[in-house]
Image (cartoon, rainbow, N blue to C red; front, side):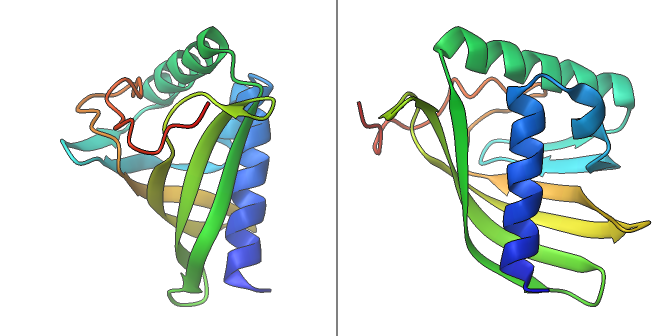
Length: 145
């Protein structure tokens, strides 16, 4: 299968889990420890409790902002060996047709574990320096209303 399709499918499934506040479905798609790189920090999410804390905080953030959909679009992806993919994508947090927060870009590494694709590492363009990430330090250069 095409690495772009695999990564897009992964992002769509994880996005649905976040939007439906289904932590177990989200957790099943993350390999701990998860490394997160931002423009301000290198973070490591090592425990399920830490992952849940970040998940809950992010869900609260998007609910408080009125986000009705998370649109993530893969721009490029390639296999690294048989069981790993690295790809670049953008995230737009929307309320109906209006973008609520600036677009941010990410590079993600996923690996196949027991037949399931899971996140290993994420590098994004946010300026968050702590986990959980609050997306309060996004540049407003591409914000649309």
